Image (cartoon, rainbow, N blue to C red; front, side, top):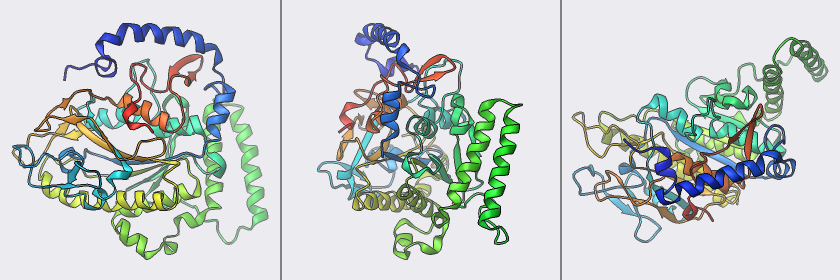
Length: 431
């Protein structure tokens, strides 16, 4: 890969004028920042009042675009699966997505992603951070950025939760320079935090007394330590108390058996169903994780199993949000850190391929029923405009009502763009 971000994000004939414009705009707006170390008070308050939410389905390891959104049947790299028609005339998905194909008119798909990282260790974090320019700071994951920019909303529940297989806990690293307060609260295996249920031996009065004792201890703790560390510590406890008042979110006995069947009894299905319930409760940003997609060996059998689970969970989510009238305010994103190689290796697998891949979206701020970008006949490279992850961050923020050209972070006096400043939104995706 020889491409650089400026090559992907800005057409060559516009680079100089765009840089000059950015420099002028930065100077003109720098004095307007200040809302909680973020942006102007009026803009910040308007964003915080928004009822928009995000369901971010992270397919860890690399979903194959050829076995999902951009099939190339009957070519040397196409693999054994057919392409099937969707609800959009002339648009085909892999036959591994039969339920999702019927919802294509609700989706926004981009097939022209060309990103920079060929490894999980770099790609997982950099893709979720928008791969910004190196300014000597660690940028926040998209969930932490939304939590900072848009806040918890009226629900007062944690603004960024992560439903995932394995262990849970508070993942402060996601927040980067924003500070640990904006990390994710992870529900390992979809379970609430440890010691979540208050013992029967502790009544309301004693619980309130313990809460006041904790607040007093926090003040003493804060007097000797960095303010942001104490803020995060207190924040976690406050969020836990609010979650304890919503214990029903974790009560699987309340689930409709038909929903369980539709989403699938597997982890991805049940975690996506829990994600929907978190959205219904008012959580601002919900990330749902699926692991095991790194199919260097036996790619086709692997995707036969994995895609069936994804198809059930993703299609059920879009159907439910649409039926409930929530798709107008919820942004749904399904993506990996890269795609997989057109070339099939000696182990009948596909390797890592950031050069040409796809992701799918639905919901608020997007134009439904569009497919943007294309790859060549064999799916090896993008034909026409390539789009980096910076373009997607601009697009997502725009869809949520946040203007990346008018909104900046203030990192201790250092103004920082919320999305890669050489990129722009993909206008064809926006409503």
